[in-house]
Structures are given as structure tokens and as C-alpha cells.
Image 1 (cartoon, helix red, strand yellow):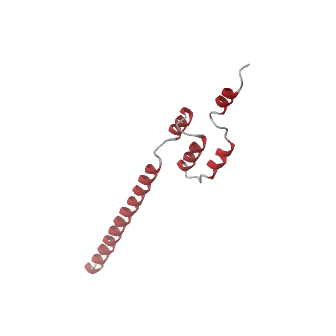
Image 2 (cartoon, one colour):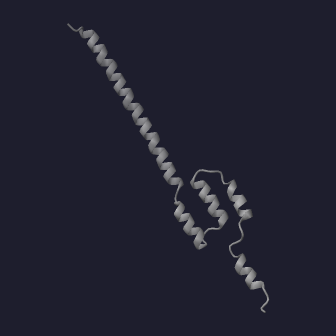
Image 3 (tube, helix red, strand yellow):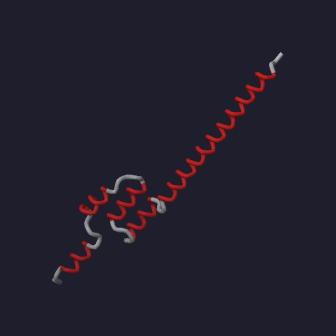
Length: 102
């Protein structure tokens, strides 16, 4: 026959384990939700949006590089080097306007 005192102890242990698992599950799901909300808030643009803005002239090459890096969570030091090496977008038109007519 089963000892009622031992049965109550086992039920109590199972109850404590179940409650602990529920509390831990709550905090884990809350942390995951916060992380997902933060990542969604940090990426207001997709990479295609950034490309379209760069191609239409809304962003400079340096701005595009900086925003692309932040989109992927990379340091934006590459944006400074892209700014130094990229030719200005208006360089072809400006030089054509400065040439004397022949």
C-alpha cells in the first residue's frame, strides 16, 4: 500500500517543479519577445530600401555604407573608408560643365 505522507511529498515536489518551469518559461519568452522587438525597431529599412535610396540619390555612398553596416550590426568604420574612396556622384557632370566649349 502507498504511504499517504510519501504521496503528498511527491505531489508537492511535482507541483514546485511545474510552477518553477512555468515561471522560467514566462521570463524566457519575455526576453525573446523583447529581443525581437528591439531588432525590429533597429531595422526601419531593408537592404533593398537602402539600395533604392542610394540609386535615386536620397543617400550618399557614405550614408548607404553606414546604414548598411548598422543594419547588419557591423561597426561603421567602413563607412569612413567608403567615403574617402568613393568618387562624388556629381563628378562626371561637374567636370563636363567646367570644360570649355570646343
